[in-house]
Image (cartoon, rainbow, N blue to C red):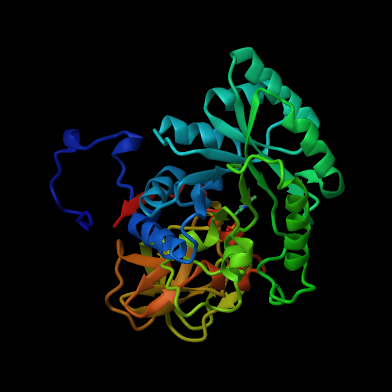
Length: 399
Ligand SMILES: *Cc1c(COP(=O)(O)O)cnc(C)c1O
């Protein structure tokens, strides 16, 4: 990278002025390795039986990675369906030319939104007879069948038909002529817990409840209906959770949701968070750094000011708890993380200059920092870390 010299001559007229002319890597950005998504998906798929499909969950803009990019590579890796959370997320993928079946995992409950969903060939998740009736009316109006998935609540108490009433309601739904039930599913509440293989665990209870319902409708239900239950953790837990399809998010992005690690699985993180050094200063011993003056130097200290802060999605409560990588070396972050910037102690380094790129998440040489460790430090889960990154960070595809 070229740093402007004070005495250099410029043809100022030639320099651009628009937002689109700004270098994507001018400040801080997210690099997404499409190939990592592709290999993660094909690796995970190799754990499934031949007839079990892989739904790539790309909600929340593909867990912050860029849903369109993730979808493209997940499909290359063998995903046959996509899962989004909202109507808008689904429409965006359709506009980007994605042709695979898309399931909206959130609830669509107005006639208007269900019509939009139908017209975009997006399958809604249905949790009540009321929603079924609206879909059936829409299908009837267009002289077609409205494809959808039915959801049953087996222990989340979030969306889904009530477990105890489902069998009876399913019989009624079977008589609706203008809907096509493409799937029946439920969602695990605790698959990432340590005890999930214990027969008395919440996950096993949910699976048994789900299987109990399926048994009661199996003799008369259409056999093309896809049965699905597992998220990433459920999928990795035991093949008893696989059924006809798995809905995988976190592990496709390269992180293991389980405490125990499967040795045969080498998932690769697809996301790198990188930042430029915007300024360098040297402070004496006993000088405070950042808001609240919480960090005071214990020696003469060289600081790099990085152009990233909590307004980009780096949790402020990670202040003083994280490290940054450059050239296979760790450097500690010091002082409070501010809205747009943070400071790093680079004492002893001569290679870090203004304009140098440093890595906040990802790897370099044998050094690696994962959102999983950020999550632990900030008392949250990796899912929240990944979808906290703001649009201020450009997403740049690398392979
Ligand atoms: C988000 C979500 C998933 C994916 O969960 P991961 O733990 O990230 O694999 C699966 N199913 C539903 C209903 C979801 O909302």
